[in-house]
Structures are given as C-alpha cells and as structure tokens.
Image 1 (cartoon, rainbow, N blue to C red):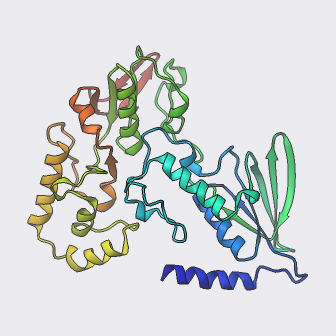
Image 2 (image 1 turned 90 degrees about the vertical axis):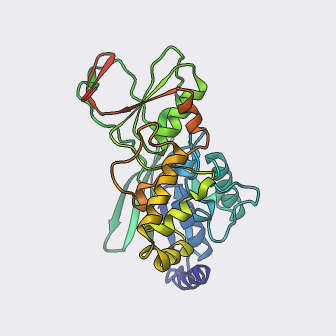
Length: 339
C-alpha cells in the first residue's frame, strides 16, 4: 500500500517537474543524510534536476561517523527503505558500518553520486517572492557560489550541533569534555579516569567500549536509569515485540504491533504486564545493580537496547555506576550533588 502511494506521488510530481519553457525544475537539498538522499532519489525519478549539498566529506549523516559499537536498537525491518531491501545476511540489528554500506549501495543503485556535492556547506538561502524561487549560497574549499533553484528542501537533521550541558566551572577546567559524536576521534590513555554522562544508548555503548579497550574503570554518571533490554537475545520472552503488545506502542512501531496492541493491549491483564517487567528485571539484573527505573514504563522509555555483552562488563566491575548529577567542575575534579 505504501509503495502504491509513492508511485502515485511520483506520477503527480512528474506532471509538474517541467517549467513553462520545457526545462526541468531544479531542487536544492541541504543535507546528505538518509532524508536528503531518499528525497533526491524520489524527486530525481520524478523528473526534477536535483542537487544535494553535504558539508562533510561523506554522505550518510550520523551513520557516516559512528563509534564501533553503534547499531540499530530496533529491528532492521523498521529501518529498511521500501524499494531497496537490506542484504539477507544482515542481522536483525546491524551495526553502523553495515548501515553505511547499505546507504552506499542505495546511492550507487539509484545513480545518485553525480548529484551529491560533498564538502559543500550551504551558508545562506533566500526566497524571491517575485519569481517564487530560491537563491542558495554555498562555500566549498574557500570558493563561494550562489545558485538559483525552483525549490528548496531542508534535510540537515537535528543532530548537526552537539548539545553539551553548561556545567558550573567548566570554562576553567583542565578536563577534556568530549561529546559522544566526537568520541571516535579521541584516544583515551589507560592512566586516565573517564567519566561518561548519561544513560541513553550512546552513553552505555561508549562506557562499554572504553571499558573493553582500556584497563581503567569507567565511571558512568546518570540522573535516572531507563528500562534496559538486550537488543539481540530473546530469552524468557523478554522482547521489544512482546513489550509493544502489552504497552502503548511508539509511533515507529510496525503495523502488526499497532494492530496487536489495539486488539490485546488495552485489555491485557495487569498481572501479565507485571510479570513481563519482573522477567525483564531478572534477565537484565536491574535490581542487582539498582537500575530499576522509578517510573512505570511506556513504550518510548524502553529505549535503551544494550549490546549483549554490556552485562558482562558490569559483572567484571569495569563500569562504576553513579546515580547523581554534577554540581560543579573544579580544575581537574568534579563535585557531585549528592555523593
């Protein structure tokens, strides 16, 4: 059904992809992540002259610069593009390198490389109401250009600028503060004491990565834990699919999950929900490590799919869990609020 809808959309766009003088209409797409690349493919097939501007030296967005343990938290089927299947040998939760290879194959298959301009930053856009066109100013290797387009698509994403909390005293600290997106660029010495802040996917992945690559113990600081589950194993029926059947689904859930919840979720017995959470606590050893969240779960809060090896790192004592928050940063030390 979705594919049929896309075909109809493409038919409509092909009817409007020409100017009155018979020339192709032009589209500027800002951003070469998955949204920009897919938009380029769809509109190019619709007959438009498309140009994608990407300021980095690679397309693919966040999937072009992942840390080694980055991967999909959800089943790959939720991430698959409708007209380009994942390779059959891919696991349910591919790592970032597999995802990037998939994007590369997509770009090559639909012959998009010629329309992607890498290392080209869009510095300004202006709409001309008289001609209903857009002027796009770009900067590439110190060369500034201004080009007119009929349409403009902004696909720059929401992760372009790292968000780092402003800690009191951080301006004068000697401690290097590194955002997770920059983790891959830095080398941590065994003599150093790393502190990872947060309890989301990136924080847990990076804490495990440092613990496995170095002899030093990693401090993991968080204000409150999220519900954890193993993104690969399905022991004891503790799966994300079963969770989606018992609790309100996230908006990205599959059609089958939504239908299953509509049929059973509202009437599911409280005992069944509680049993699921008890199984989850037991499997992930949440009580043993004092990681049981204070709130009852809803779909979007069960959002941390850890690697199967995360628990073994905890058991080996390589990660020190600290439920607290930073009060001040003083020179080469950090003061916490409660401990």
